[in-house]
Amino acid sequence: MPIIAHQFTEDLKKPALVLVHGLGSAGTIWKSLIPQLIKHFTVYAVDLPGHGVAPIHPDEKVDPNSLAAAIVDEVSKTHGVQQMHVAGNSLGGWIALEMGAVAPEKVKSVTALAPAGLWHQLPMRKYPPSLDARFLAKISQYFMRIAYHLPPLKAIGYKKITHLWRELSFEACRDSVLAMANSTGYMPLWNGLRGRKFQSHVPNSVDVSIIFGDYDLTLPEEIAQEKEVAPHHSHWVVVDNCAHVIMWNYPTLTVELIKKTALIAS
Image (cartoon, rainbow, N blue to C red; front, side):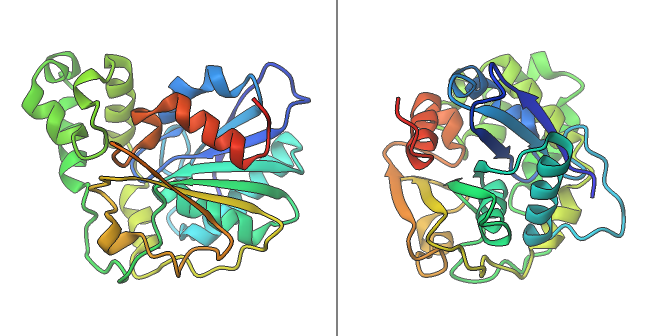
C-alpha cells in the first residue's frame, strides 16, 4: 500500500512520532507544529493513499485497520523505526487507535485528536459531511488569494473546524485547499470507513489520550464521542473553546498533550 512518511528531525536518536492526518487532508496539516515537535521527537508525517503525494491503487484495502497496519509497516521498513508514538486527527485519530491495536509491541502511545470511529451509530450515508468543502476546494484552488480574502468562502471551508478561521494564514489555507482538492483517495477512504466503527482492542501497555474540543461540529459529542467504544484505559480531555482541528485551534497545547501522553517531560 502506498503510504508515504515524511521525516523531520534534529536528532534521529529522539523518540519517533508518527502523525496521521484526516480525510481529504495531508501530512502538511501538521506543518505549524513541526518546529516544536522536533525538539522532542523524530517526526514522521504520513500521507495516506490518495492524499498529499501518495498514490492510491484501485483494489487495495483502505479501511482504518488496514491503513494502520500499512503505516506501521512503512515506518518500520522504510525508516527502521521499531518503537513509535502516534498522534492523529479525525480519521487519522481513528487510524492511530488502530495502530495501537495492530502493533502494541511497536506503538508506545496514542494521542487521538478528535478521532472518528467512536460513533453512537454507524455512518451509512453515501457521501461524507465535508463534501461541500471538497467542492469549494476544487473550485477555489484556481483563485486562492481572492478566496482567502472573502470571509463567506473562508467560513464555508473552515468555520466548522476552527474558531480561529478568520486568523488562519494563507499558507495553511493554501495547503489544506490543495490537499482537499487533489485527494484522489477521498471517496475510497470514506467508503473504507462507512458502516464501520472502532472495535479493536488496545492493550494497557499502550498509553492512550483522546482529546475533543468542547464544540466539535464535525464529530459532536451526541453522535460521535462514545466512551464505551474507546479503549477502556483512555485518558479523556476536553479542550475549552475548541473545534475539530485541535492543532489549528491550539498548536502549543497540542504539542504539550502529545508530549504528556508520550511521558516526555517538558
